[in-house]
Length: 465
Image (cartoon, rainbow, N blue to C red; front, side):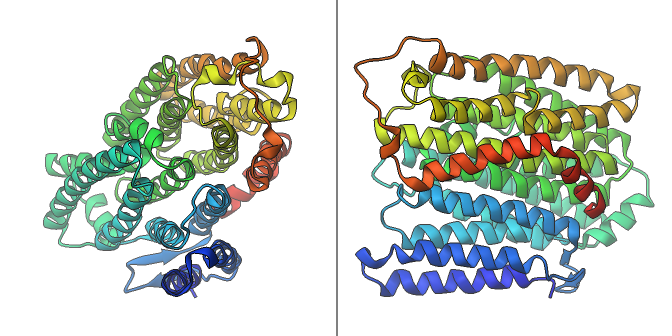
């Protein structure tokens, strides 16, 4: 059963739709647990999927795709618990969340241009609705509108690129397109088509210059949705982009150069822009943009090792990024504040909370002993071994890692160095238990992967193409 996880998720989406219409508002909290059960069963089902193709080759399933499925489902589980006390009217929210997750999973295994577009739109349209879910919030409405406009433009550009590819090859199946392109000379039409398609993927992974929606959306969307977009949506985008490039342009030097340029610009713009952010949500948005640049480094070398490094990076990114978002939500739930200066002196009364947030931030910065250090170390090692022509990209990556340290340390400095704001009484223990549990689990993941990185890397190597 190649589509078993997706079938299970679809069944639970229908169940949630029925429950949201039949249950009274005060009874709809049960939908949280129904959603959780559906995602857990879908995750268990990934262990029973078979390798093969369905829908006449439009969707493929294998161990590599299943790893992406697991990352997406883990991210969805975390989002469910982030949303448990944040979202009050539950039914339609979890319907949209699981629909977005279904689109993300289909995107990972899409093997046809039509399936690729349908999966992308399933994820995108659900994400637009989730972003504007708090409909009486002006920032949320503005974020949803910007996200919709940018998303529609990116989809149109991507479809235009698909039309070029279909017109040139006469096929929509990626295997057949790849066979055609790999047995013909690279021409201007193919390059233009690739750039158009890259624009669509660039929007989904928030790569420069298709990133400008991210800061406003991350600031205006409900906190759990911002966290979801920063991890799950990005993971699905990279899964599809990896397959698209590896099948259509496996050894194309020009494609490698284009992605290298995008990687360098993306990480540089993201990190420099993050330096002057006061709102922690916008800071995390630019951090997400910068990490997209690091991930593009692994993709740029067009190799098996590069894909493995990207996969390991995405796994570590899930834990450290969700850890920060959980900490931000804990603080915002109690205080209603989201600026970096609002964290002044938090460590004096809430040392464990401050320690958890600090570890996740240091992991994002790539400090040793954390998961983020080993993911960056492995990525940079792979880029170094790829050849001398990638040394400039490596140097840019190293410089950006140093730049990033400054804005992550700003938050840590506020908690540990700045004097305590005695006018602001904060009781972390009054925050929802689910949020504190997520913070604890993600911090544990950051430390565990940091200490035992090798088994994770070996597992990924065994299950990559």
